[in-house]
Image 1 (cartoon, rainbow, N blue to C red):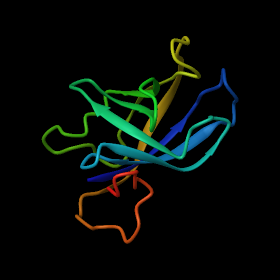
Image 2 (image 1 turned 60 degrees about the horizontal axis):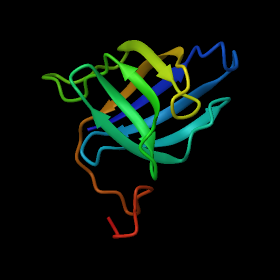
Image 3 (image 1 turned 60 degrees about the vertical axis):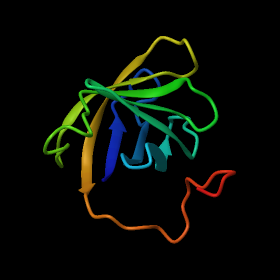
Length: 124
């Protein structure tokens, strides 16, 4: 399943800041589609737990953003229009800044990309 998430309302960072992210719960990776005011790498890893989805960088383990209440693998999955609280961390160990997340699109079809932004050293 691929989900497009809109992050926003991070007024303490920049009132106009936002990011559009694509989450892939099969590969447990995310990618940045567009952004302004939120310094995100191009892609990273996704950790899921019962209460949230945690976005970390591709080559480090520290969380960039925690999407509270986003349960990607619950029965029925997330739905378009679903919203929740997002916690933004500017660096490892920093105090979280609060914003929001909003599900823009849910694509539950299974397709294989011609070339993947998630390709790594092992070719996967």
